[in-house]
Image (cartoon, rainbow, N blue to C red; front, top):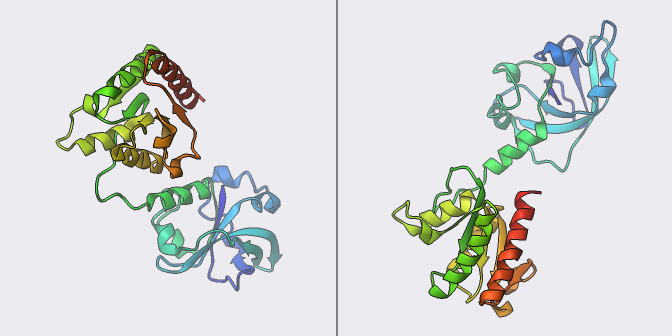
Length: 277
């Protein structure tokens, strides 16, 4: 929950006032009844919630996140003592206006002095807003298809010496109910890079083989890391792991029957760990 206080009587960064008759306006009866009885308001419980402190308006007025420390009755008003949270970015009324539905606000609330309690996680809504501002790629488009929780994709050079590596690991994973794909297993779009991006976006886990220092694989691993995907790095040689990736754990293997069998078991164990936490 959070307090929504819209008031034109915010004196400074520490104190403001709101008319007593405006307290809990635009608050549902279900929420209101948790804090109000016939004789008093349980302000001690309300103080635990973050407060969105605003003036009236829909433009560049500054909206602040504050924490109430005390509520005191002063005649027909309530005096509000609070602390502005210095660690949170500044917002404007226009920002809040754009989030009305997510914040359970009515269209006219930004133009009315009142104190409401909203049964909404304020910080979750603001976090989604901030992540939503992430710059979209211009070289390619991210896929909007859902993640397949059983899909494991493989980023490795298109070379015959890696085919047996892929086939042996694929057999172990598919025996445990997982699905495996490489970009050359699919042909959905005219441009192969579009298929690769879609594969990365829809996979639960991405295995990247750094053997041979293939620049395409490094590029694809970087995209997967940026998207926050679960990435398993593998290599036939420690020397093929660049400096920036060496702090990240990786699996090394020998490209022979015994080595590929061990690699398959190691990857299966890791995939199981990250998909069944």
